[in-house]
Length: 223
Image (tube, rainbow, N blue to C red; front, side):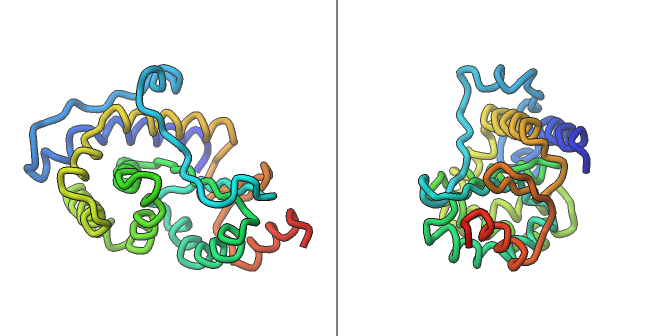
């Protein structure tokens, strides 16, 4: 997927994500459709902040930024086959500072990210683990109702209340701010596909075996 398609995907996600969540499942009143922000600056002015989700020592010698979508099969593969060892051997040992940035190809990826962020920074990565580990299951038949209900169940399983999940998914201003932040970051870093990794600023793309990923990190660490 090229950069223009990624940015267009964000606009499509925001346009489609507005009222459906509550109305389709009969959980509340209709909400206005979300409008695409004119610019990231316009969306950010006086609006909610969208912090990066970060793990690891701020003084670590290597910084890894991952751009990924919760609906991307290659991102789920990286999470299943590389993430746990990467976190244990590099992030938890203070060698790597890790920054995760969401990409929204579609409204479902945006919904999933809103559920993950609903738990706050302390619970974000735990919920993200659940979303990636069950990606095929919560996407299910691809129907809006199926995905909405499955994501809601993930939030409840993570310890959120139904009111908390619904409030997060009803937060149109946050949704707009999230898409604006995604578009700004993806354009600035030249993100054209997922997963994309910036390792001390150097771009690498695609799912890769743990050994290959570790070799890239070791080269930056002088190992």
